[in-house]
Length: 424
Image (tube, rainbow, N blue to C red; front, side, top):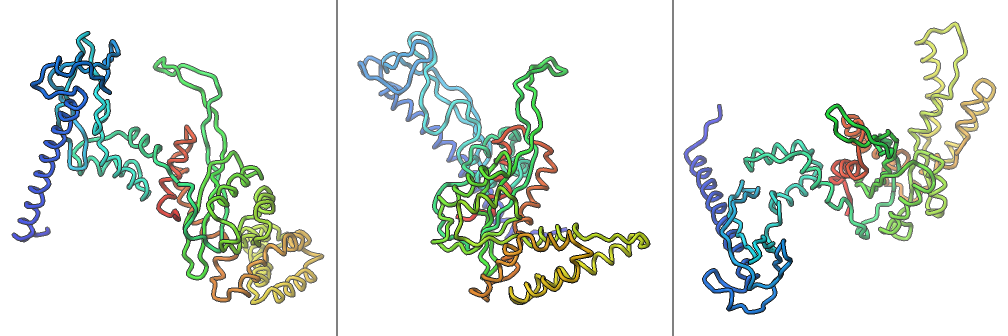
C-alpha cells in the first residue's frame, strides 16, 4: 500500500481545485462567446428592437425561407448542449434564433459546429495520439478515464483518417542509405453487387484483393540512426508502382545531389527496373539476407543414406562456406573466394553455383561504400534488416485485422504505426 503524505495530498487537492476552476471558467467564457456571436449576426443586443437594425443582411440564414435580413430574426431561448473537452464534459446553452416565418435560423458559430460533440482540444489530442502510434482502443480508454465519457471507435477512426499522414515537403535531412521493401495485405473491394444480410439490410458484396504497402526507410550509417521516409498503398510491386513511389521521394529531395549514396533492396524485378530508370547513377545493393536465403534453398543433398539431421549438417557445412564469401574484408577477396567455391562445387551443386553468380555485382556493392567511408556500419549497407524490423510491426497489425474494408482505413492504420518513425 502506497502512503500519501500530507504535503502530497494537499498539492493534489490544489491541482484538482485549480482544474475545476479552469473548467468552470472555460464554460462561462464559452457561453459568453456564443451570446456575443448572436449579437454580432443579429446586429443588436438582447434588449434592442428589430426595427433598429433596418435592412442589415447577416451571415445567419433561415433554414425555411432562406432570409438573411437581421430584422426578420428574433431570439427564442436556449437549447441544452454538451461538449467533450480534455477537462471533462462541458454543458452549455446554445442560443436559438427564429425567423418571422417560423423557421429556425442557422447561426455560423465560430467555436461550435452543428452536431459537434468533440471540441477542438480533444481532436488535437487524438491527432497527437495518432502521431505517437497509439491504438484506437487505447485512445478510447484514455478518453474514458480522463474525460469521464465514452467516444466510439468508429468516431475515433474517422478523426484519424482525416489527419494528413505525410506532408509532401522537402526533407530537411536526406539519409545516405535508402532501404526499400513492400509488404502485402488483404483489402476488401466492392464487386458492384449487393445482397441482404440476416437482418434484411442491404449490403455491398466485397471481394478480397492483395495490395502492397511500399515503404522507404532512411539510414545514417555513421551512427546507425534510421527513420521512415515515406509509404504508399499500391496495387502491386510492378515497375509502375515503384516508379510512382520513387518519383514522390525524389520530389521531396531524395536524390544523389543531396547525399544519397546507396539504395538497398530485395531484388524484385519491378523495383530494379524502376531504380534503373529513376536513380541510374546511385549504386544498388542486393539484400544479402534475401540472397543467402535463396542460396540456402539452392543447396541439394542427394545422399539417401543420410537422415534428416545429417542432411541438415551437410547442408550447413556448404552454407558456411557461402557465408564466408560475403564476410571477406575486401571485394577482391570475396571474388577470389567465390571463384574457388565455384570450382569446387560446379559439378555437385550447379544450382547453387548459378544462384551465387547471378547478380554478383549487386551483392558486393557495399564494399565500394566501405572503401570511401570506412567508418560506416557495414550492417546498415548490405541488408534490409532494419526495414524488416519495421515491417514486423505492420505484419502484427495486419494479422490482427485480417482484412481492411477501404484504402483510407488501411492507410490510416499504416500511418498510426509508421508516423512515430517518420523523418521530417
